[in-house]
Image (cartoon, rainbow, N blue to C red; front, top):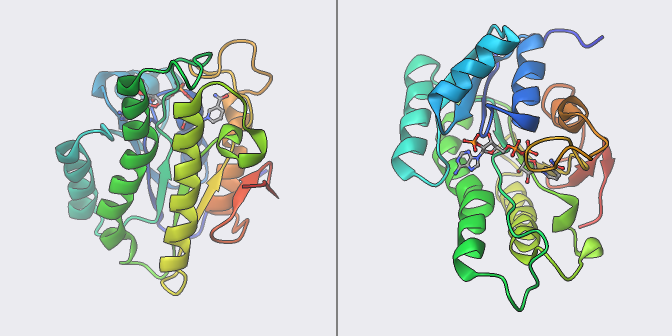
Length: 235
Ligand SMILES: NC(=O)c1ccc[n+]([C@@H]2O[C@H](COP(=O)([O-])OP(=O)(O)OC[C@H]3O[C@@H](n4cnc5c(N)ncnc54)[C@H](OP(=O)(O)O)[C@@H]3O)[C@@H](O)[C@H]2O)c1
């Protein structure tokens, strides 16, 4: 049984209205964290909070492809709290799973990079001043095994390469922030039963969220590293 955290932690989770993001919001809230559930459609977030009877979770409009949406969300947290301790860059998309690199549409590839790479990068930039307000903070990027160079196959290149880029972002930011007290990690949740993962996946969203909670609340891991199931995962 995990205990409540002893600091007044504030978290922002992108794509928090369903799937792994929702499980992270719920897990954080159970441990006493004040959670901002980022959702593109606020009504979806409110419905999720009501359905799960979540307390300590505030839905906030957040589209990681919109500069104004990201700025407004960060501004709200700045006004209310003046700090942000945990940023989970969870929002993601994967389309054209079977597409071959020789055939995949560039528009689809660019859209994937906007959500999976540029979104987390930009949101981290906007969040950093608020994260520097505290002695310790943590950015956790939800990557994928498909982002590992050890798992390359001849399909889904846009998704794979966007997650590989997210992994490089993780390492570069961790190096930049090494002396700041801000840790930066990426993790893969494994294959999880969500809209993205499909119904055949063996893991529940809660199982997918577990390593994120460990990194964020239990002091697990080392900055700049890639994890799966609380264990180092190959780049
Ligand atoms: N499921 C798996 O097997 C698996 C495996 C490896 C990695 N992952 C990673 O885990 C993360 C969560 O995925 P999931 O499986 O929980 O998928 P999911 O149930 O499909 O949820 C994806 C979430 O991302 C949000 N999103 C998409 N585009 C967005 C945007 N532009 N701005 C803000 N939010 C946006 C969605 O919002 P809407 O509801 O508005 O669409 C939704 O909340 C992703 O980064 C994914 O790549 C998943």
